[in-house]
Length: 189
Image 1 (tube, one colour):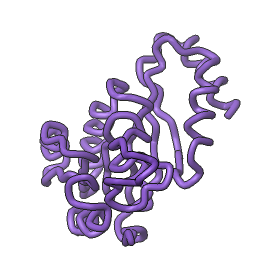
Image 2: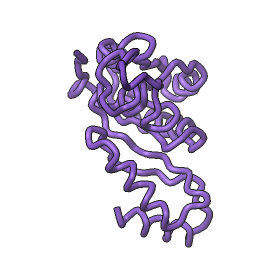
Image 3: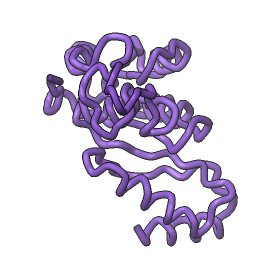
Image 4: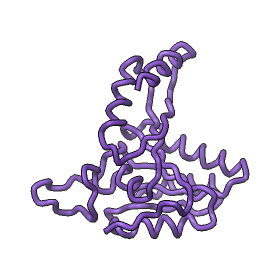
């Protein structure tokens, strides 16, 4: 059974369709901007990464912490989140890889699940967002996208209704015209 951390500290999860989309840059910038605005920010990283939490710690002025169900078990994520977020106004969680990417398990045996992740990859960003009850902001590398962005976003919005995708940040937008086309595509979904 997974204990939820909902309702303690407001949180947002920064995720992406894949690695290399700009999650770390956006997350670190957001943490720094929130701190500069006078907020106490609790930074987190999904997975066993130690480099990104270091960037987060510098931006937040407090330790960056990991949330990794594969290492500690899904049942410990909510208590670790609550402990790390104590005294903060908001928590910002950077995801790992693509939003639904987690440890691959044998679907026939269910081995290695470390908690019921359902259709969510075990230890994935979506899995952790679900445990802590936080909405997801999707960072999309928009270079090379036009109207197809609508299909990409539609897929992420409809893939698993238990994951609340609350917004999108478009990274690497090439021009004002490109931005207009991308905004139109996003508005379709």
